[in-house]
Image (cartoon, rainbow, N blue to C red; front, side):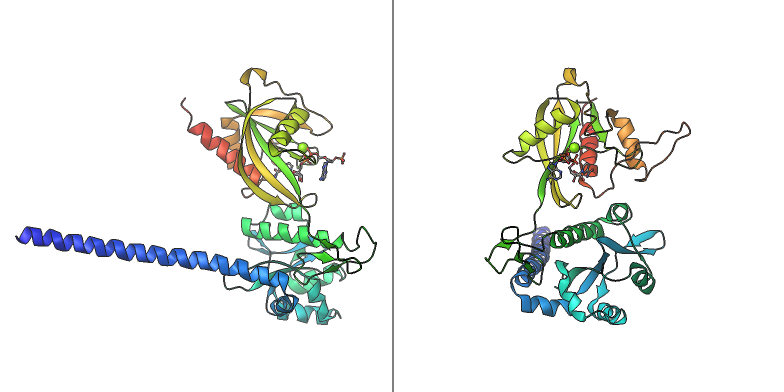
Length: 354
Ligand SMILES: NC(=O)C1=CN([C@@H]2O[C@H](COP(=O)(O)OP(=O)(O)OC[C@H]3O[C@@H](n4cnc5c(N)ncnc54)[C@H](OP(=O)(O)O)[C@@H]3O)[C@@H](O)[C@H]2O)C=CC1
Ligand SMILES: [Mg+2]
C-alpha cells in the first residue's frame, strides 16, 4: 500500500516536472519567437516610415566607413568594428564642421534585440586621418578586415558596404537622367520625375565544392592571396537555373561534367558588388576526373585529399611560406560559405565506411 502511494506521488512529481519543463521551454520559445518577429516588424516600419527612421537615427548606433573602407579598432590581438552612438557621431561631425543632417546619408543595416537601430555611414567627404586619430582606429579594406573579424561583424559590414556602394553608384535615374532620392532607411531610391523606384540589386552566384568520391577540388584565382584555395564560383547567366549554372561553371572552369549536385546553404557576399552566394556540393564521375584548368578564369585547380584538407582547416587563414619557398594550402575564413562547404565535405568523408 505504501509502495503504490509512493509511486503515485513519484509519478505526480514527474508529471509536474515535465509540465514545468514544458512551460519553461514554451516560454523561452515564445520569447525567442516574439523577439525575432518584433525586430523584423520594427525594421519593416523603419523602411516604410521616414519620420520613424529619423527618430531611430537620433538614438541608434553607427558603423563608420571611409570611401567604403570600414572603421576598425584593435583590441588586444582582435579587430572589432565599433558601433558609434548618435551623440558621439554628432560631436565628431560638429568638430569637423559637418552638418548633423549628414546622419541622413546613412543606411539601415539591422537592430538589436531591444530594437535599437544600427546604421552605416560613409564619411568619405572628411579627412581620413583626422577621424582615425579622433576615434583611435583605422579604415581598412573590407577584404583584409574579413580575415580579422568575427562572423557577426563581418556579415553586418558586408551588408553595409554593399548598400553604401549601391547608393553611391545609383544617384541618377537610368531612364530620365534626373537625380534619384534615397528613403531614410536606404532600402530604395526614387526618381520623382517619373516615379520609378530602384531597389538595391544583387547578383546570384553559385559556389560549388566538387568531389570525385575521395578527394575534393579546390581552385585559386590569380587575385587570391598566396596559397589560398577555395571552391569554384561563378555568376548565374540570365535565364539559367542554379543547376544549369553549377554544371556550366564546372565545365567552363575545370573541364569536368557534373554527375550529381545538391544545395547546402546561402550567404550574402559583398565582392565585387553584392552577390547572393548559393552554395552547392557536386560530384563528378570518378573515371572522368582529369582537370583541365581554364587559365582565363583560374590560376590553378587541384584535387586535395581528406588529410590535406583537414590539415589546412587547422591552419590560420593567412599566407604561410614553406622552406621550399612554396605557400602552404589555406582556406577561406570560418564564416565564409566556402569554408562551410569544405567542413561539410570533411564530415561527410569521415562518416563514410572505409
Ligand atoms: N567565398 C569564396 O570563397 C569565393 C567567392 N567568390 C566570389 O564569387 C563571385 C563570382 O566568382 P567569379 O569566379 O569571379 O565568377 P565567374 O566565374 O562568373 O567569372 C567572373 C567573370 O564573369 C563575368 N561576369 C558575368 N556576370 C557578372 C556579374 N554580374 N558581375 C561581375 N562579373 C560578371 C565577368 O567577366 P568580364 O569582366 O570578362 O565581363 C567576370 O570577370 C565573386 O563575387 C567572388 O568574389 C569566388 C571564389 C571564392
Ligand atoms: Mg569563377
